[in-house]
Image (cartoon, rainbow, N blue to C red):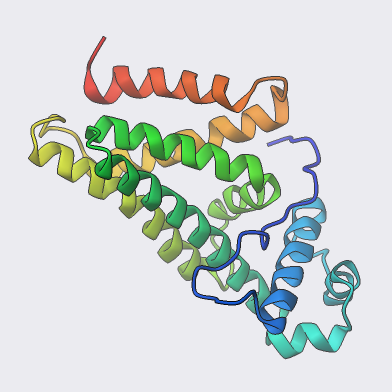
Length: 221
């Protein structure tokens, strides 16, 4: 897939909910390494990216990389966990917020679509990298990628299953495949938006996907 170069990502900008009183010094360093790694790998590929380049981009010594991560592969594996974890948390928060407000399951799915777009708008380089890695089968972190991918999809599956149980969705839908399709729709549509239709606003893209959701999942006109 041909894409325009993504702007520098700030995959570490979102503070962890597990910290108090600010991010620890080590966590701040790891965040800088995540940011450096994701931008470099998105620009030139994993194999071509060296630990020296990651250290230089992050503004730290090479030894600092190895102090925090055993190898470049471990750094990348942790980067995938971190990034997809942020996406999963965003999806879950959107679904829970809709439930608190008394919204329908379609409303929850719609809120998750928007949350996914907001995430991708904020972290385009990570999203590009994540989608590219989904197609690879010979990486040491493939099993990790499958696990974290399933965590994100499972949030959508949960809403679909609740919708089926409540009679809002048809019992005939294939929940796992539908959930994967919805997540994939957001990822691919957003990458197309960022790469080929950057003049569109987030609201515009969300409205288009929302209309698709209303027609294909709920059956409402």
